[in-house]
Amino acid sequence: MKNIKYILLLISGICAAQNKFVVKDGSKKYSVEISVANCSAGNCEGKATIKLIDKKSNRFFQMLTSADLYFFLDKKQKPTVNVVELYGEQSPLIFDDFNFDGTEDLAIRNGNKSGYGGPSYDVYVYNSTKKKFVLSNQLTNLTTDNLGMFTTDHKRKRLTAYSKSGCCWHMTTEYAVVANKGLRKVFELEEDAMNGDFVKVTTRNFIKNKWQIKTKNYKISEYYKE
Image (cartoon, rainbow, N blue to C red; front, side):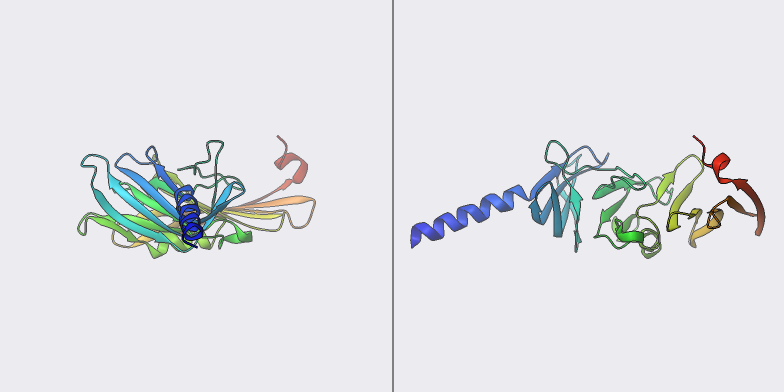
């Protein structure tokens, strides 16, 4: 009986070890230790802890959690990091400066609650006063209301989100980050090919506190040609 208990404990320990990952190359400032509930057949999912270790001091910095840190494993049986592909790979952890304040922020995969069952994220921004990462509801909602993780344009200081309805309607939306006010929508590109022959393309630019709107129709064969 003791031998059976020992074997069960040993197996449990091996399984737990297999569900732990160390990520050292995703962030400039932090190494990450990921522990996730379940891994099998090339993917992991379930409750998870994300432990941040300061690279300079090698000391514990902060612990964050995910109710469902769903991700695939790469060829080395490790999670990817910082990959954001529309309709493709989106990593469990994404380090970036999402609010353009010069400090690194972090998005953590939390299930598949975005459009068409795509990846959703809890997005944390670094709070320099509290000296820790805090959840941003606006940025988190931006991932669940669209097709997964938004992209970040540092040169233009814009966040871009994508949405769709079926095959023939797409929306690209850009947001600026306004200090102490959060997100402000500043651009939309709407592509409507619902009638089957033409694509109705509408652009909306927010300039000097007013929306400037332009609409033009294109033949589908011309608009989507490679």
